[in-house]
Image (cartoon, rainbow, N blue to C red; front, side):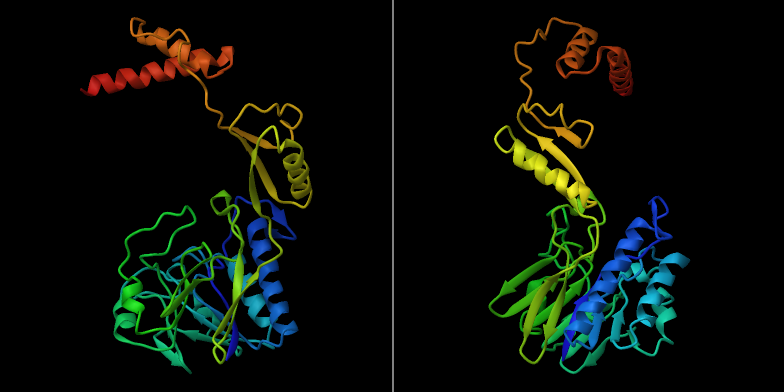
Length: 337
């Protein structure tokens, strides 16, 4: 079988977003990306799409506008066959009485919803549930498709957390593992197993800056897995600027901003950015030398703090506010001793 694998669409109401074509910005972008995935399938004669969970975002709350986008996509792509499985965000909670928001897809003729562990050809498909880990550990197949956090995988921040399942639980049972749940696209390739997180389809916020979002094209006959970038959404860029690269960075930042992307600039050395201060968010991470600035141990706490806010460039008209707040915190801590 040849199919496109995607996951973590996280369709939501995004009520804080500005509206674009009658949809919240992030929901509109996800709609465009979905449509581009559909176009890719049609253009490349790929008949099947598997979505590995978290199509919707808000767990036990269904936003009608998000559900509408979901249903419109499946209904407008009758030429494709979809296999969808529950992710944790698609469910109302945990336990035996959990309800899936994806139940609304049950009557769609081109959608097969996997609501219990199912074998399709050489693929073992396991939706999210309380007992999914035990099921995965006790079974085997050439391909595993599921939705969980692996012990060795990482979040967008690069942090890894201890999980109930690790690579050693999968080796010898599965050869290829396709997962949803973590939004960072990542691969763990070893001699005897290949594990792929396809990742989310768009950059949702600054926490996902710099990530190349994608979907996977999988051919189970040739055992080939290809990554294809998603297109059609606003990206987040954070440029490190120096005096040497200033001209190139500003040129690139202006071009990306004109294309509709979000751009901020971080400086770790003294760079004169007065000419772009109104165009971009500038984050100052330059190291400040606070030695020999007139702060010594004989000074009162008030005098030390006054000198400290001055050293850190706090505007004179705001220094008293900072000073009073700092003294208030210090005094409250002293009272707790």
